[in-house]
Length: 319
Image (cartoon, rainbow, N blue to C red; front, side):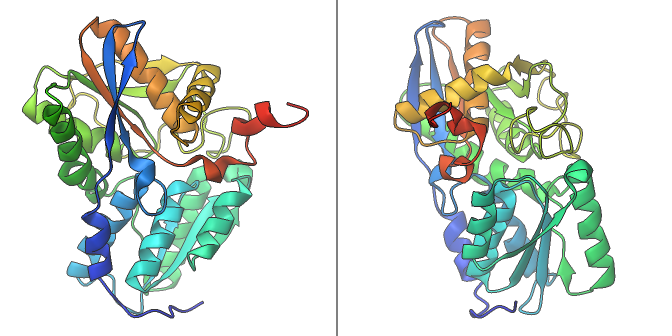
């Protein structure tokens, strides 16, 4: 499939200029306020839009992406959707490489944006998807690989945009952030926002949220019952917890994360499982810090890409 739209880098600038709301969530058990940055309100429905637009904008400026480029990325879902959207806006071809077993909704969204996709065996997981993108790039000089797991521009997107927006919103409400948590897929959000926060408030606690007792993501090659979609252990080349103060990871049981995601939806925030994981992690950090503190996290993506997953099992007739 070839691009049918004009090459328009200025459309990436429009994406980068977009902001998202930050709302307060009173956490009665801890006596703290949790600030939720509603990243699912970005154009394709996830915080990965910032990564895609920033990486592509930088690559265009450097001459590495041009009208004849094919962008290829390994992703379990949200990043590939974001790149499909951004490449559609830019006017270049996009191919996502994903492990088998991702929700059909995500594949349809990629196609609706004009993107294409290829699947690797489920047992190969994300490492297999990454290897396939490298093979494609070696065989075709027109391929550009964003390499989300190792590209410093990923974290830079959040250091330049997400972090400052979040801090400014909380400050405008008369508060100061004492902590920030995020689950790690690539670690771009955690590192970018964490750097912003620690630069302003060196005593702030910045922590990674992990799924308790589970070290394998369902799309990394593990059993489908494990993990939270998009939360991947051991693949990030960006994660440096020591740089962010060395706070230990915050473990959250998967059932608690799923319950939190459903709770968010009932409160009017239509999010996926990773947002529930983030909220649950923020609550645990708030309880650790004690009453009166302010902890922030992000609501990563929209629930529509999870209709066929177990996020909605409790609503099915046999659920």
